[in-house]
Structure formats: structure tokens, C-alpha cells
Image 1 (cartoon, rainbow over the protein chains, first blue to last red):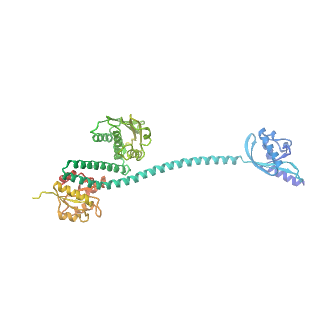
Image 2: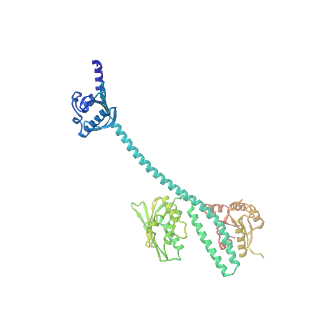
Image 3: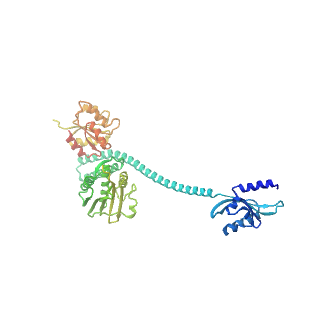
Length: 378
Length: 123
């Protein structure tokens, strides 16, 4: 090889940033370029006669040499990613190793070239973890979306049922009206007591049907709150008063203890809140099975005073553990006469007012319904 | 001398109409009636009742419209109207009733005794 060409090769070898080496058949270094020598903290002339054991931890050196032997035996270029130590820092390199043969195809040793790919690997890892995070985020948001969709679907379903119920209720009132007047007329015409008792039964059932219709209509009322400045104590007291009038024939005691100041106002829909309180009181009444019913209503301020809690405590039959979980579901009811929308509506009203409702109960020990409403003094 | 109060019933539900008319006549009123909402105003003009029981939701012409037309006629404007409905029960409807000069409103199913009470109170 002319000296000129050899000089060019040498210059090329020493200027290339990639690490280049050549080892003999025993994996003993014959030469390396400047870039590799620099990593090993030697000059390139010092590499001759050294092995990987001189520069790398035993485990790594052993692995390099095993690879060398395998490549020299099998022939062909082997390309791989490899652990590497540069100035005590572990790196990842991409390496190409190939057996070196003379013109007679006799194996002379092994040639290697490698370069640092640590930063690409790190970037990939970061990308991977970002991707994982993204997937977690997407999953989280999807779950939120599904919940929101379900809520919306439920709300829409209730609204549809409401519209439907209202139509049916209105339509039923007309035929009921005719039956009622007809029964009245028959009653005026016949004097036979046995017939009159049947007519009285018809009349009683018409009244019951009318109550069902009224309930249906109240459930189906548009649930958009008309916020007004409401004196909460007055509202609660009025609900209790109406409740007492409604059930005055029965043995029910209601005690109202209110920490709310008389002048405390909240921004609320009085119709909604009245319906909420009445519903809770009706439920309490319906839980009394024959025995004397006592309802204790207590209202207290929550710290730091931006909301208050009203507890409705009864000594009724209580709620079984399995029923507790289903209380707020639409059409869940344990009553023979009832369509199971009362607490669903209560929950909706509470949600619309940014409040909370909690029911704790033990069977045959009574129930506590806790309603928390924010005070938005107006 | 005939002192029976003449009560006009306007309702397109024929069975209800028949029953209510029977109630009124059993009670001692002199009922007149029509199931045709379009013809109703003319019928009132002809029969000159002391009081009108008017269904608000009827085919062809609503009770509100009938009431409005009665109010526009000098010969019928002072006849008190009691509305009957199963539908218009909300607050916004009460304003509409006031505008149409409807004095009272009964919600179906109506208790016949309430009808009699209101007729006596209003006419």
C-alpha cells in the first residue's frame, strides 16, 4: 500500500467520531482509532496487546469476547446493541462486528465499529413513558366521559319519562272526571245501601288515582330551578307544619331544633326545597309500622359556616343494607304503592343546589337522612 | 216562577257532559250544554245562562278562546265562567285565566259538590 494512501486511511480513521478497533484471533487488541482510545483513557498506540479485561468489568469483557469468538466462527457481520462503559458512565452503543480474513480466507481476527446511542434510547424511554402516561390520562378521561354520558343518559331518560308521565296523567284526568261524576249521579239515584257502598269504593279509588296522578305530575315538573332568596328556617317550619296537618290523624311527633338563624337566606328554588323536605318527611312517616313515630329534625352549621346540615332522624323500620345501596336508583321502591322516584328526585334537587344527601340506617332502628345545602347569603 | 239557575256546560267529552248535566239537573239547576266548541259562543248568546262551566282543552277551539270571545260580546261579557281542566294547572295558566275573565278553575277529576259550591259562590 503506497504511503500516501495509508496516510489518508489513518487520518480518516482518527477523525471519524465512531469508535473503531481490530482484535486478533484471541480477542487481543491490535489497533484502535483515536476516538476509542480516548474513551479508554489511553493513546491508540497503547492498545496493542491489551484485552477487554484491561478496560471493562469482567462480566462485560467476557461477554464481548464470547461474541467475538462466535462471530469469528460463524462469519458474517453481526450488528447489535451493547452495554458500554465510557469514563465510568454506562452507555448503550450500537456495534457492528465482522471477522477479518486474508486473501486466502484465513481468519485473522475481528473488526469492530460502534457509536453511542444512549441519548436516542433515553429519548425513546421518555417517549414510552409519555405514551404510557398519555394512555393512563386517556383512560381516565374516557372513564369520566362514560360517567358523564351515563349521567346524561339517565337525566334524559328521566326527562323523557317525565314528559310521558305528564301526558298520561293529564289524559287520565278526563275519564276519571267522568267516572267520578257518574258515580255521584248513581249514588243520588239509588237508595239501595249495598249499591252505595260499591259506589263509595269507586269514589275512594278515584281519589287514590288522583293522588297518583298528582305525584306523577310533581315528579315530571321541569327540573330547572328558579332560584330565589329563601328564608330556610321558615321553609323548613312550613314543611313541618304541613306534614303535621297531613298526618294529624296519626300518632306522629315532630321535633324541630334549628340552629339556623331566622334571617338566614339561601339561594334556592323554594318549590324544589319544599318538595325535598316533604319527600323525606313522607318517607319517614311511611317507615312507622303502627308504633308511635318520632321525627327529630336538627339543623346545624357546618364549619366554616358556608353550609348547613339538616338531619331528619326517625324511629321507623329502617332500611336493610342491600336496599341502602339502591335507594337513589329510579324506580326502586319497597312500597306496595309507589313508583320509586321520590329519592331520585330528591337527589336531583340536591345536585341542582350543589348540596349533598346521605342516608344512614339500621333495620328496625330508624333512619337518618342528612341534607347539606350551601349557604349563599343573598 | 222559575227560579232555577241556568247553567251552561261546554265540554267536548260527551260522556262527561252527560254526567255533569245530570248532576246539575238532579241538584235542581237548569242545565244547557254543548259539546261543540265552535258553536259554543252562539249557544251562550241564545240561551243566556246565569253561569258557564267551560272545559279549557277542547278540539277545534280551546276554552281560552271561547272565554275570550264571550268577553268581547256585551251580552255575554258579564256571565261568570268556571273553568274545568285536567291539563292547565300550572301557575302560568292562572294569568291566562285572569286575562280571559275566568273566575274559578276546577281540576279534573272534579268533585260534584265542589261544582255546586262554586256555582253558588260565583253566580
